[in-house]
Length: 341
Image 1 (spheres, rainbow, N blue to C red):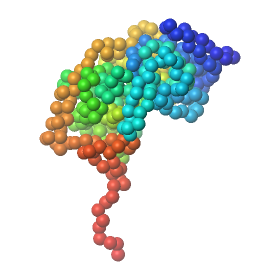
Image 2 (image 1 turned 180 degrees about the vertical axis):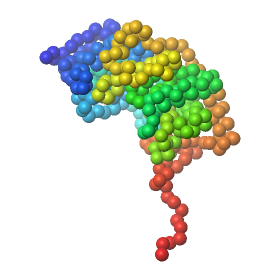
Image 3 (image 1 turned 90 degrees about the horizontal axis):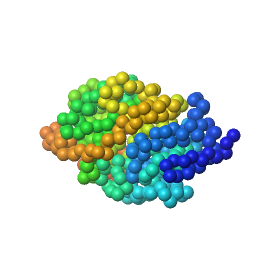
Image 4 (image 1 turned 45 degrees about the horizontal axis):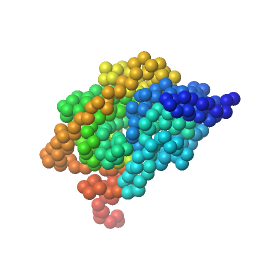
């Protein structure tokens, strides 16, 4: 059994310890298989992570072991991997790795990193997102096909708001659509634009799409998770390995592929050949920077004409002025009535 493996990635030599360690028992995939997968899609995942503060989702004992999210850069970080300082909602901060070359991804994979969670900002300006990210999350009773239908409807909404999205599978049951934007708005403003987009989708298909934050209110619908645009919320990057037994990956798609592609088509063993054949389908994202003016105007109109203000933040965020109560509806205190007799 090999104890170490040394790979040349770009201009770097990256050592891989315990390459024969089994990470995905159901598939018989080892650490070496995962590392080599990331080598094969290096240009694609680097495009998704370049200069972005990135949280590492690590599975040091494989998919069946315990996992943890590493936000702060590891102490043994090589000097050639830069970091970016991000501020959490609490006011605390962390220095996260910001990959600038594919070797950084391979180095992190050696630590047992399956999924890379980049912030929607670059290290040069960590307060102004340059991506609007829409997460279409199937709820119990719905399927991936329902997320596909919602994604195609989302495409039309975005078009009407002078926006263009790049779709990808989540690697699970859902779909993600990323919109490159000019880094001119705060997290709060970008989240407000996401809420406006989500509400417009919900208006058009209220029986199939929801913005309800509380699970008990969502029903069998696709939830548009607007809080994925809140500060310190991240979405798995394109090409990331997801922690499921069959080792799926988050796969960039063209809009023409969205109706027929299924998540099972894309895993650690199939993506390398696809990437070698067609390259990174999202390679041109960085050539665009759309504006949120129309989406924010829609948010203003929702508030002015329909009284639709903010929606609840995640529970670990500080309370925000104008935010609704963060109380699960079924647990909300009911007005007291006559005493029982």
